[in-house]
Length: 321
Ligand SMILES: *[C@@H]1O[C@H](CO)[C@@H](O)[C@H](O)[C@H]1NC(C)=O
Ligand SMILES: *[C@@H]1O[C@H](CO)[C@@H](O)[C@H](O)[C@H]1NC(C)=O
Ligand SMILES: *[C@@H]1O[C@H](CO)[C@@H](O)[C@H](O)[C@H]1NC(C)=O
Ligand SMILES: *[C@@H]1O[C@H](CO)[C@@H](O)[C@H](O)[C@H]1NC(C)=O
Ligand SMILES: *[C@@H]1O[C@H](CO)[C@@H](O)[C@H](O)[C@H]1NC(C)=O
Ligand SMILES: *[C@@H]1O[C@H](CO)[C@@H](O)[C@H](O)[C@H]1NC(C)=O
Image (cartoon, rainbow, N blue to C red; front, side):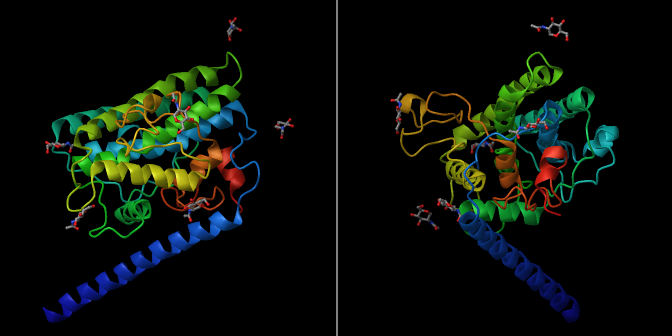
């Protein structure tokens, strides 16, 4: 008995050390990167073809698809529509979430299947590529939330633990895809199939984001157990992390504001839609998106949700190795 308990606790200690070491690494990495890289055109649109731009979004659609498919159904794209993954490796660590709230369970299932159709349309319109390796495991989620809150959460954040956590994990996903389409659309060729498809995907991402934010809003002032942090504070922290990593200003705001400064017409503190001073959608370029989903603030340095980098010509063009 005694040896197995001590084995268990040493394994645990090694994991804990590894985990805390990772947090430290990522935090010092992002600080260092922040200081060293700030070229002038950091936020300007990049040069790319229609096909490359629409394919870029496929990375985000894959990530959101696997999170919702596993979370809602306990199985991923390889079980539902395996051809769409084009032989890409299965995601790391995705699992079924304990969704006891019936609205969250049914809406998550619906979003999961929406993702399958959205991926199929992209593949049929501009062609696809193999699904990139995605890390949706607990250590990565824990790191992402620790970075957002600026301190290690104890216990570490588990998005699969309950309905509320699952929504908080989902919170940034359709929003990032929405902002990516808003950025891409003005660059697409008039009357092209890419433009037509992107303009049909955009409202779906905006709708998914609004639904998630609206499900969270009534609970904004409620604590997220077991943390002494409210739902509203969590959304603010995640939004701020995406803004810090993206490095192109405020483009995401939490669901409840401390004052009316970022509210609609500077008059509201409710913030069910995250939008600019004229309540228009923000936009994020492809490199901005990569800085965020890699979690490193650097489009050339993959980590986080895409440990081996995103796929497609745009994302691969930034990789140094
Ligand atoms: C990056 O720089 C900005 C502006 O100088 C600062 O607000 C932000 O906290 C920095 N982020 C990190 C991770 O150091
Ligand atoms: C953008 O790419 C096209 C096609 O590769 C090229 O002809 C053009 O010169 C590029 N423009 C800039 C500003 O790099
Ligand atoms: C919001 O709080 C209510 C009351 O505590 C709870 O029943 C509901 O499940 C919560 N919503 C989510 C999405 O967790
Ligand atoms: C758009 O493209 C279609 C076929 O690709 C063509 O029939 C139509 O005339 C075009 N419309 C405009 C406004 O260019
Ligand atoms: C929870 O946070 C509030 C304010 O943010 C603070 O006043 C309170 O002492 C905290 N409670 C615990 C148990 O940490
Ligand atoms: C809201 O406040 C910002 C500055 O915080 C200002 O630039 C903007 O014009 C204001 N909008 C309205 C509608 O008053």
